[in-house]
Image 1: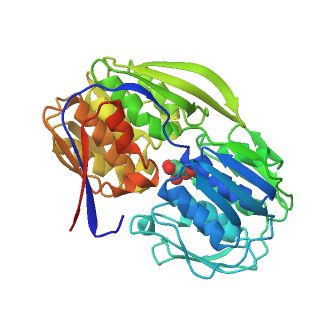
Image 2 (image 1 turned 60 degrees about the horizontal axis):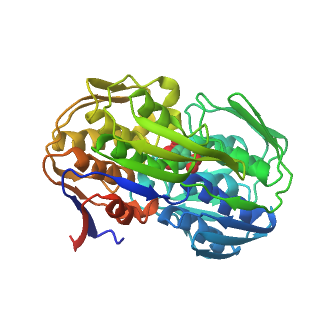
Length: 442
Ligand code: S3P
């Protein structure tokens, strides 16, 4: 994954997707299992851990802070928790690669430690907004410096005494909410956070699983600082954000039937299923159960004739990572699909509104980017070359577009697929996609 080599996907047009797969573990839950397991008392066993570059960056960061972590081996990780005050100063800056979740959540946790730390990342991560966490943390008494434009590297000064905050988040962001909850564990008093839209609640659920008292009411969470976490067992479900590519692929390809096993169906994450169902997708939800505090199900998706819709606002934060895939579904849906209220897409691993619009246009799709969303008209996909801008979800979304393309689709800069879905191309090939991976130095 060196920055001067290019990994290219070349996908032959057409084909069907058939079979049963279990996509890798949930990225958000994997990050949190390492973070909370590390500051818990006792030994936490994790299974289903995502062995992707992002969650491994979090794992490495905690090893660098003297936490003894065994694995991952076949998704199993054993974390020897050091307790709330047991982390130690790392010898060097913590390198977090492409991972926004690592950086934003760690900033909250590290603002409360006794030692100084520095957090840095790759070019994409170093251009993403960090004031959304450093500003409220400074109101709690944290001391963090950013670059002049509010980006990483972040220099966090330890030894600050934090006080609780009552904070109304200006944007719907689980990373900001979770960052402040982690700082709140160490703050004096009750930290209260309210969000303008419902975002993923894995931190709340997992803290409760570690025995911490977290109060949740409508769009507000609160907790008191000064408690402790008790080690537990975590079974990480498959990532619905990774399953999403196959939900779209299985819907748009002809004669397809796919079973996606053990997919996390947390109500704060199921926007993609709801949006696809509104578009006419044929998705059955089977064997629903609760595993370690998180809902899980098997999903069966079959080919369907999709229709364009106006995406309901309340579903936007519940599908925030799935829009690259949903835009490809929209290109195959009768009529017009309209997305608004999704300006957050502009500050993801890439500007997902612009990069998706450019890529869709490059393969012949009528896509009009707007400030906070996109208008997509049903189009016949011609094929061609797409630039992913190193964004994993853009690469994987366009791989699915080939199922309905007239000619091959070539996608440049795909190495970062390994951040969230390391075996993506292998699974695609097993299910029937004719995908080739090549690398060259550039
Ligand atoms: C995540 C939250 C979301 C999401 C990201 C993972 C998390 O980001 O896009 O991939 O694990 O908390 P925001 O909180 O910025 O919306």
